[in-house]
Image (cartoon, rainbow, N blue to C red; front, side, top):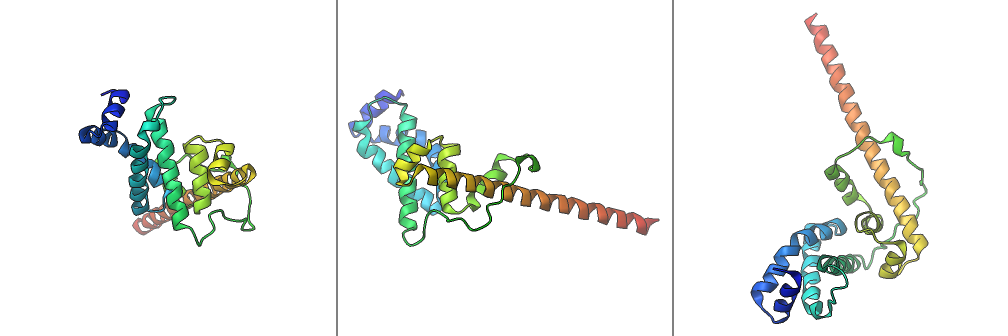
Length: 196
């Protein structure tokens, strides 16, 4: 069913069409929530709250953008709202912790997408939020500034720190792999000595 027909039927409170709209987009939107939120519970909560807003505001969808993009914007805002609710007592943006040493990209081996996502999940919430908004969701620093109520320079700084965090974690992981390989080679050499 075309998006325009689906929207019309949803606005007429047709439950089957509402379910179809949810089923069509919920998987992709849940992935977005997981990128922003700390755990699956918060991601599910963000998704649910986001879709409530989608259905509540569906009449305001003008078709200026793709339905997917419109829903994605609502879901991202819902995830950010969830973060704010969870972080009332904790500062969202991490201040400089003293060590802002740069890590060269030439030092890093290529990682799989899944390995990189695991590292992104380890980031402090402020880093992760900005990283997702810029790198994954392709938002400008001006958009982020307006959405989060921070300055553009804060957004840029958080992105730089997030990238350095990612690089350091990737190097650490890479060095652990190299160490395991060396230990494996040493064990093989020792086995050959026993044989000889």
